[in-house]
Length: 276
Image 1 (tube, rainbow, N blue to C red):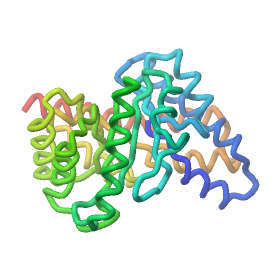
Image 2: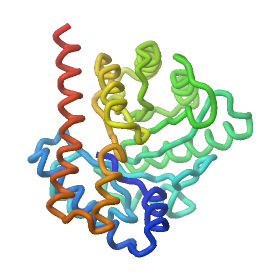
Image 3: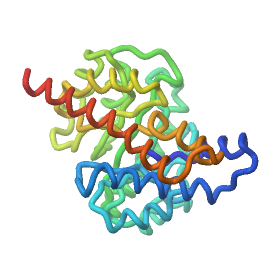
Image 4: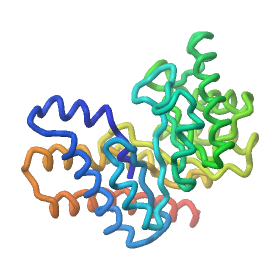
């Protein structure tokens, strides 16, 4: 479950008007409870949680066996900027060692030279900080917001990142039903780093059926290890809970059901691929 969102909840709070930030914190607590109810201690599950609205959930998750990713980027920044201290390494030294550092970068191969140079400098700083503090690094690439995308677009970005000397432990990539694009991404990663832990699929707030179609396409590639989807799972539930239309128990139940649909879709798709 990806629920490290900050700007999206800021927008929701501004739109609703009568809800305070403390309610978002409580909703993220409920989201952890929903995940735990579904996972029941299975360490193959995990969450992306932020330190702003999700600090309490991060603390609670410390006593659970789940994978935890945590964002370092300022939401929507391009070129990417980092939250916390001007020295990103100082920020990461305060994070538990099992928090995977997640950084979303809006990067397209056709960006101008200055934009690419600024983004590259920031990624090099962050990668160095992650290695010095012994944190795993998850790099999330979204290319489609800033240019046309074909079967080689994201793979080109991946190749470029490796040529900088940056070796993410994880990649988080956009959904697509283009199997040629998945093949190109997997080939690029394995060519540079056969020990990479893998890829997780993001959702881009797509409708559930579109996310499931993306899961089916991605599950055929062994380097894809699963998904990290957010608003497709929680957005409508959050709005209903924040406006008092549903109670805690209903929110937890609905979040769990929404996650379960994607989990079952993933397992079915992966199982079909392995059988083939």
